[in-house]
Length: 444
Image 1 (cartoon, one colour):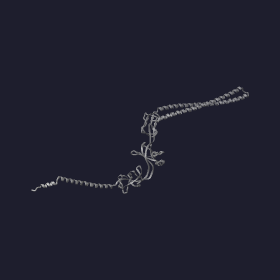
Image 2: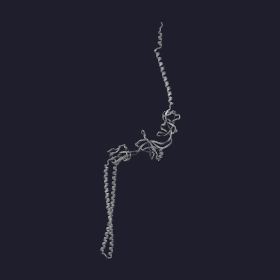
Image 3: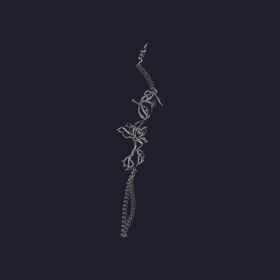
Image 4: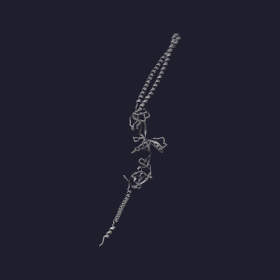
């Protein structure tokens, strides 16, 4: 009989578990390498094809045109808003505050009542002064009455003088006639002596009349002096009355200007002192000043334009959104500040509570208009390591990077000194995706 055992044993020995496991591991490794390597190559090929396709796609952009226009020559600086007038309210009399007729920070108009101060002491003093004036006026009336009386006495004395002079002339004529009769022995000497005595009495009476006239005229002169003195007293005492009336008016404090009030420094019941206590401040803010300084190198241009009375100023506030306002220069300082080399200007603006004293603003002073300059929208300009540049759209719809020299910026326009020609088209939006030579398409 044939034994099969050895053959079976030999077959089991060739397919041992160790060999089988090794074979399976090698097979799995080869399959894994095949599967991992083939998708990677395909992905790489797909990526390369996609990248080349993307590089050839045009970039959507917005185009603008290089234009020529007149542009202002401006000086730009920082300005400070100032009140046209700022008034500090102080009392003109001593006293206690009885009423306040406004709220701090409120707008007030010229002549508006702000405060009242207790006026009773002033009223009492005024009444006393008025009584003194009345007394002096009565003295004036009395002196005038005395004048009238004494003037009448002067007239009477003059009338008496005329009468007595007539009697003197008659007595003198009688004496002469009696002398002739005595010489002719028609009368006695006693009769002649009586005529002489009558003439002498008449002379004495005339002399007395003259003295009476002089005395009456002296009284009249004294009356005139008394009247002038009494009137002077009336004027002096009336001045006292007027002074108290003014002080009485000071008891009511009114705003001297249109403006906005500041914070209250006093309250009802406080006692204030003349010209010592600060009560409130009022700032005129419409119109309002903006003060700013410019370099002295620009003084010639400013003086020329100021002579034309046509020096516009534009300001921009710093809040968001900013406010733009236009005014006119109406003040030019008469000296240059030697420490800074600048000169101070002020511009006047019509203000509707938009500007506030102390506020900082950006100032643009228009010195002239420069005609026929090349301008482009400001957003077209890009900045690089070599300076400013723009992208210019070529006829073949590719973007060319073009260096430019910017002279100045006026609002949203840039004035170009070199690098562009009028009529060229430039990229104003989408330039961040461009490289030199990139294809472009205009997006709507």
